[in-house]
Length: 164
Image 1 (cartoon, one colour):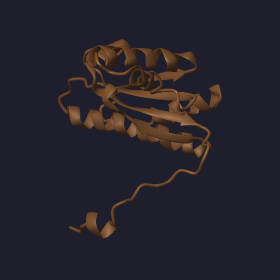
Image 2 (cartoon, helix red, strand yellow):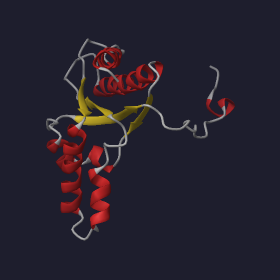
Image 3 (tube, rainbow, N blue to C red):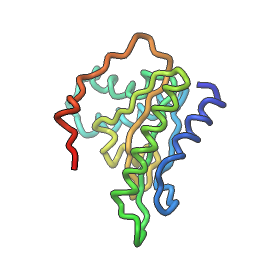
Image 4 (cartoon, rainbow, N blue to C red):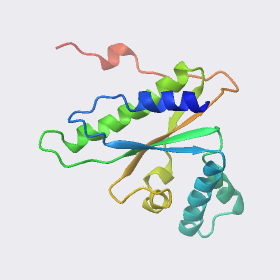
């Protein structure tokens, strides 16, 4: 996406339900060499925690953020509030990630919201600049699709919908 499109995507990502106007999320943009630097962080932590790992596995970890030209990390954190519980604040971060996927898709890009082991590893999160009280809600990979996306099986509505 162009700089203007990225600004649109991020603006839409910030327009989500946010009880208390707490903005309990922020974004990290990984593009260009930043994707490789983030991959180095991931690979170094992987190698340290898996000392017997073959070089090919470490190389896979280095390339975690290189499948798309743009990756947006959605960082979630909670703020103490008498009326807005942490769960609601975390849901706001999830809504932000979904808005980013929807915005990118509406602009004609392919977008995929992913995590992976490293999204939950404190050493990786520290290496990516997250504060101790922050979590990674996900990474949205954005680029031009090279093939049609295949949808995964979805639940039958009659199995998941009830009426009160």
